[in-house]
Length: 251
Ligand SMILES: [Zn+2]
Figure (cartoon, protein in one colour):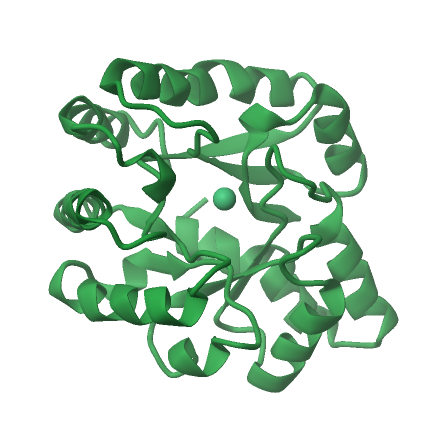
């Protein structure tokens, strides 16, 4: 089982252990620093910590962390050049499997500048991107993202994350992969399952997005077990449990 979007740096070894024992083999851990950073080298240190430290902490509990690094929209109060240089290096060394999470939140000039630059790096290096959509103004911000993407990147490289019932119609007919985040205050497993039931299993990845905010490290296994209990076809369940993530991230 794969949890396709977490913030491992904000979680404990006990969480990693529970996730592993509940059947999660791999989690994709993404960059996000929850406090304002206006200094590039502090942001770089946060990213290096994820790459070199949190991966080891999880591994000790049996959980393999694959890494996505980049500048989250919350952290766009920086110049960014040092991070962009390092992204090229991490991609070349195969240290990371995606640039992420990136995206837009409050639609500031800095957010647009840094988002577009990272999309260009991804397209140039044929790297995947994990794109965040916010809790507030989700539909409006998603529309801006959908305007920008075709000018910068090929759809097969993109997962648009935190999609829910309210915005599914804006993206279901696009070629992007879509992320469903099952988390308290975002979306419960019943809503995720009703989306899968209505739109099919082919386009979706499942994740918990566990972070420093209240979140459930077991939301992916709980959703998978519920799908099984409800009698969904095992081949379909396997797609959102593992196969779609393996194909998208090439892992
Ligand atoms: Zn996240």
